[in-house]
Image 1 (cartoon, protein in one colour):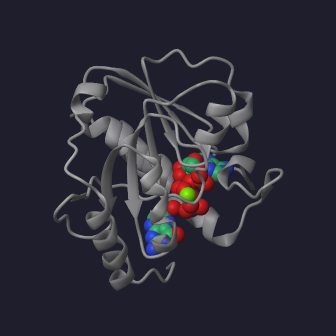
Image 2 (cartoon, rainbow, N blue to C red; image 1 turned 180 degrees about the vertical axis):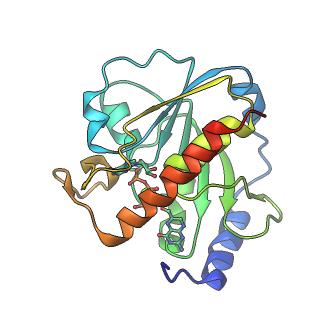
Length: 197
Ligand SMILES: Nc1ncnc2c1ncn2[C@@H]1O[C@H](COP(=O)(O)OP(=O)(O)OP(=O)(O)O)[C@@H](O)[C@H]1O
Ligand SMILES: Nc1nc2c(c(=O)[nH]1)N=C(CO)CN2
Ligand SMILES: [Mg+2]
């Protein structure tokens, strides 16, 4: 559907594997039995009033807005094209065929877990999920969150939120690719939140 090339996904994952050091981050310790807020970069992001949950996970571009408001996420899930500020959070960095040129951003991070959409190897994990937002939900669920609350997750919107990419000055009409990415994200979030594991 999107024309992503598996060989490029492997290339990106291999480079990330080389960049990462053995630096175990215990996601279970952060997330198990916790109430978790997952923050996306939809247009409603700027309307967030208060985040009451114990743990905050931001999805890529949403991080820039949160940090500008003085909110430092505990965990940042990113494919590197939205994030432009690097607080001392735990990062879950996703390598794929279209972000090889952005992997240098990992040098700005100290606590990093690598993921990719290929079979796991070395320091590369495969937790599931597709976009940064739904992967954040999958991770929260996998590592034992007791409750997951979504903010800025506007899957049916006709707009891409302006914090999605650093170069956007306002919300913009949704592209074909983003609409279809959000469709997949919505389905994964629904199925993940329905799970009673
Ligand atoms: N209307 C929306 N616009 C942008 N993001 C949205 C929207 N609704 C929900 N989101 C969620 O917010 C997350 C963070 O947004 P961002 O655009 O930075 O994500 P991304 O997954 O890195 O996307 P991309 O593939 O464009 O790099 C998305 O992954 C998505 O799950
Ligand atoms: N190669 C490639 N893989 C992806 C991409 C992408 O843009 N390129 N976007 C994703 C969800 O945002 C998930 N996976
Ligand atoms: Mg991104």
